[in-house]
Length: 158
Image (tube, rainbow, N blue to C red):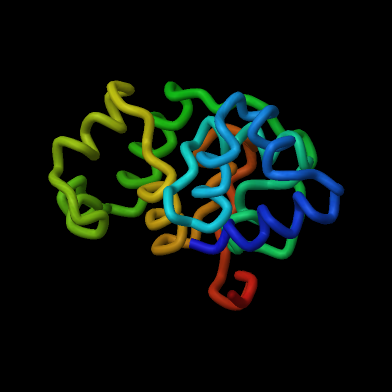
């Protein structure tokens, strides 16, 4: 994943400290530091909060596109939309839960739980799925309604 460096760049560009961002996220500065240096993966709720704060797309933060933001962005993520879109995308593209489980190095029940609204997809799983299948993370999360897919050449170089 790419977001750590960009989070730092955005923070510095906005003349903020790690403590300032930690206050926004209601976490400790040490915890935020771990996200920025990528020792820990940032949870989706914090990722969403930061994208809203900086007015950028998750796709941009993940390095999937050079487009910083989309029009008509929903500021919330919704487990109901996420589960529907994951399942719909998987079925439209004839991808089995087992295929995704293998890709994510997990078991099929984890994928089933994402699709059944039992568990919110993790940041790392979302990233891998979107990176592999060139689909917008913002779309999967319900931040935008237009289904966007990327070509390899569209993605930012990392």
